[in-house]
Amino acid sequence: MTHVVTARCHDCRYTDCCAVCPAECFYRVEDPAMLVIDPDTCIDCMQCVPECPVNAIYADTELPEHYSVWTEFNKTLVGIGAMTTTQGEAHPNHVDLAAVQARETAAGWTPVEPENA
Ligand code: SF4
Ligand code: SF4
Image 1 (cartoon, rainbow, N blue to C red):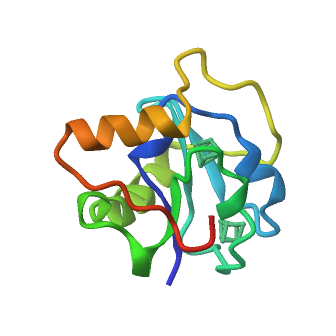
Image 2: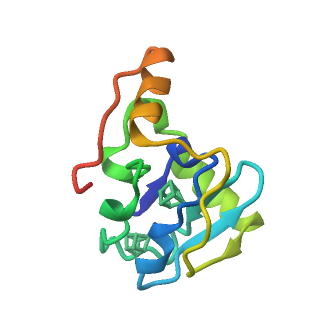
Image 3: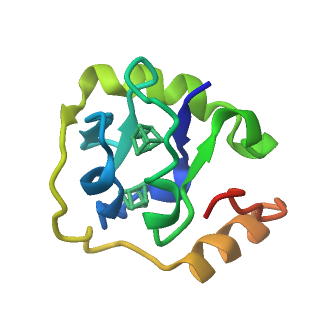
């Protein structure tokens, strides 16, 4: 098992998540602009999940179908990312949870929140 950052994180970078991770799992990626989790170091402590303002982080076992590809994407994107543990400025294009849910609904998906958010 691991935890997975999904497309909900695109253009966020509130970065509340990485500041609480005890295992230095978060990597900053520039394209897409987001953070991802290293599945080889994540200890599934769940501390990051409620910190994310847009509920972008799920356990891989509870990923909604529309985000199922993100387990593999996190694994791949870690390789081009830079490890980060410090909270920084949000991306200028960041949106709130209501906007993320509206985006998913417009795509024909039913928004699903992480169990531990
Ligand atoms: S707080 Fe959530 S949306 Fe923001 S960088 Fe972390 S995982 Fe991404
Ligand atoms: S579940 Fe825990 S170990 Fe895994 S990324 Fe989140 S805070 Fe880090």
